[in-house]
Each structure stands twice: as C-alpha cells, then as structure tokens.
Image (cartoon, rainbow, N blue to C red; front, side):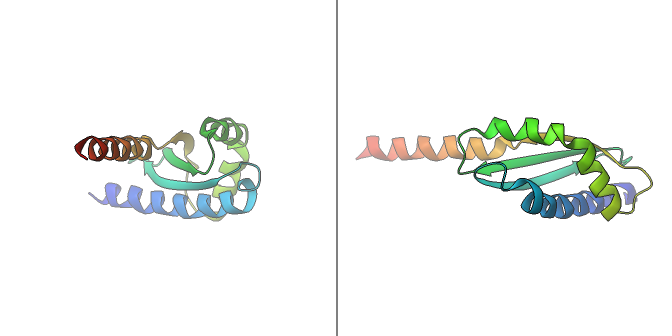
Length: 116
C-alpha cells in the first residue's frame, strides 16, 4: 500500500513540474492550451505515463512528436527538480477521455434536436 501511495505522490510531483515546463518552454511552440490531465507512475517508479489534452488546436497529434524529440531534455529537467533515485522513463499520449466527452456532448445535442 505504501508503494501505491508513493507512486501517487511522485505522479503528482511529475505533473506539477511538467506543467511548469510546458508553460515555460513548450506553450509558445504549439498553438492552443496544453494541459496535463493526469500522470500514472508504476509502483517501481521507473515508468511515467503522461496524458495530455490540447484545447484550441485541431492538430493535436503535432504535440507528441515535439515532446518525444525533447524527451531526454525533459527527463533531465525533471531529475533536477524532483529528487528520485531513478529518473522514470516518460511516455506521452493524448488523453482519450476528453475526446469521448466531446463525442458524448455532440450525441446529446443531436438527441435534443431530434426531440424538438
């Protein structure tokens, strides 16, 4: 149980520091608002899955190659800001939950129009 709690604390730290990094270093390079929706860290703290959302940009997929290209630098920044024994491998992906919510909202709107 303590490992799970620890991985949650590390995930929270990673989310906080990556959010700062994105605002400072990446936000101007990609149109739209970039948000880290959540971070999942394995219990051994060796892997971190970072889920992102992008608002105001139709080319959401363009962000992932940029982050992949700078992954080594991002890991170095995290290592300097978060004191961990091992620096976790980072995996970035777009958060599918937000797209699902948008689809559901559109379906609800369509249903309302058909009722009228």
